[in-house]
Image 1 (cartoon, rainbow over the protein chains, first blue to last red):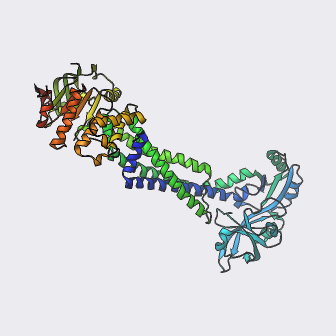
Image 2 (image 1 turned 45 degrees about the vertical axis):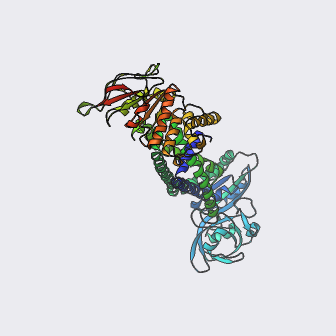
Image 3 (image 1 turned 60 degrees about the vertical axis):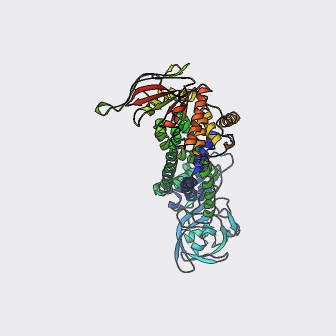
Length: 378
Length: 231
């Protein structure tokens, strides 16, 4: 027989197991919905700038006024020699990222994004390679795709011959988890092959990736490059990544829609939890009145109600994280990755607590106005 | 005997204007330590309103109420919960036990309000339940107790804060005759052997024999007092 305040809260909660089940279901539903939407947002955001973030470059040279990676405009590759001749440049390479058409074995057309890079350079190549050797991309018309998109592109095995814009190509390797936000899968190829697939003229490139020499400040290198080049923009990797993310997530409204769904999840959670905690409070109203008559302060009663909310939040959070784990794991095999980094998982606990305690405020308001004289009414 | 409750010219009016209802009309009442009084009268006569004001739950419209010599009329509403915790124990017609807690936990909850918890609360709750004859029912939930047992748990809970005053609202109304007498005998013991001032609102004429004094209220006024058999 040990009584702590939390025990009253706990017993009030578990007294009606069906209602507790409804409360926890509401919390789990809301938290999973928020996690999925936030995770999708993070996954989409990472996908939009994946090529940039994994490029290994310090600077991106683009045609003037290119707002994001998919909007690259070809320019003369002769600028590369100027870049290579600039002090402070460790290496620089031509790079293509352009949409083109892929023909599946059944004749259907699919849009893909060809990524052309120089396999001799460490910049811009595929990552998370699970099958094949990236060095094989040095050979003409060899390509890598991501295994997620095998079915979409009609690819069943390594060595399969495919066709892009009338050019034959051979699938020589697969990556894992390189998703494209645009739903057009990335196809990695040598720069030369990519020029053919994406109809980029032989003397042109779409980007030049630059790696600064050790100890050279990226900003000063950018200034030096700008002084020697015309009609181009030079972005740091982080800048270009952010510009691309902002374009896809906010300018197109895609990110807003996902975030709104997350907010909707929060609202649904607050309403469901508020309703069930309120119903629990109303069930125990006479007991709260009795406590008040016995001399309990409003603060004491608030603590009981808030503890109920906190207990619900913690249990609901644990269950929701278990469900979310499976959802996140499952998403890794699909076209849209749901990311749940540790800071977000921890932050969700805070959000769940805020949601449940916020929901308890309706009940607190009811208890505050409770007249203890009610205990004398039969 | 020392006065525990002193009521003078107490008036309580509900609502205002033409709709005003005077529930209590210039009531005077003294209750001493060691005394058990019965407040009797028809429904709506003002008994429960008087009990609520004396219990620091309701505020009077005018008049004076002193609890253990302390005037409560001028106290801020925030001061009343502590006054109730320290001076008054309540026993209700419907028991008002917490169904999710055991008998001992119900008693310990009242101690928790006073800041007593853990082993001290556990031992005190057990002792109080022993006093009311429920030493074997510490871990029973209210649903597993008879009406008389529930009311005895409620009495033990009312005594948890060691109050000088016990206010009981129809404590036998929901009980059979035998249980009612057991509960009244317990309340009588509280008054006569433990020196508490016990005020009971009741319609139950069978309980008249336990009272030191019977106060009849009608239309918000004390219409007569007389000594009880126990006096």
